[in-house]
Image 1 (cartoon, helix red, strand yellow):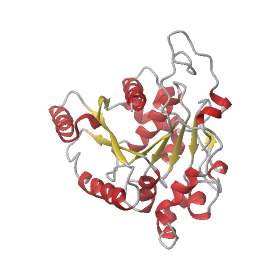
Image 2 (cartoon, one colour):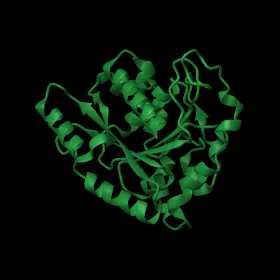
Image 3 (cartoon, helix red, strand yellow):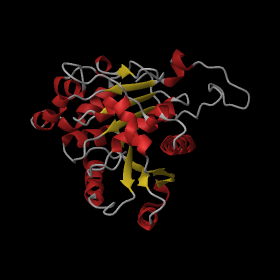
Image 4 (tube, one colour):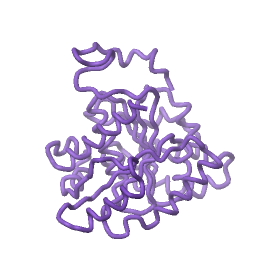
Length: 289
């Protein structure tokens, strides 16, 4: 990827009180591209919602962000209004046919600095086709390393709800793992298996992978169960858990059907406010590293 220091795309005038190279309202930019894999093999925990809304929130504060849709359902592509039906160049062609990533990535409409690499249903076949390929676990890592069309601050890789080769590719390509955990019964079910897989990937493929962030989603403050789950997760994982809780929100659920993140669909909603605060936590944590 293009080195930050030489790129003209970020030449901005420092505002009073800001650091050099930032605009007023911008969040600190990480010293190098932060690549997050957003994974949890349990379905319905908010992986796609989290990927899309954190990416949108960061881009609204001056960051350049790419969402890589690795889920054959293509929900992240839908939420970002990026075409992913028919013969659209997609992540299947990148992983299986070696199409360069810059031929797939599209800028998200009306969201400067936000990009998406879409998934079509073809990606469902990639799990099988990758099995016989050389260096099958490193296909995504190689594609990202060769991608230099735009200088990026963040990459969010949205995984399918499984621990197959697509998720392994995502874990291999990332330097950080973000796990959304819903504040509901059985929240930690299956998490042990994911963490065992992460340990295997770390031991054999990607020693730099760091479980850096856990985000509590679907929090309902009216129930005692939600606060008990949040407490249990915090006692297990400590400071890895973001302070911000993402509430259960109708607006968050509605937004994708309008081809939007909740950040633009209803910026004043509790869901948008929470995701904005979670994104701010991530940005400032990264700046402190």
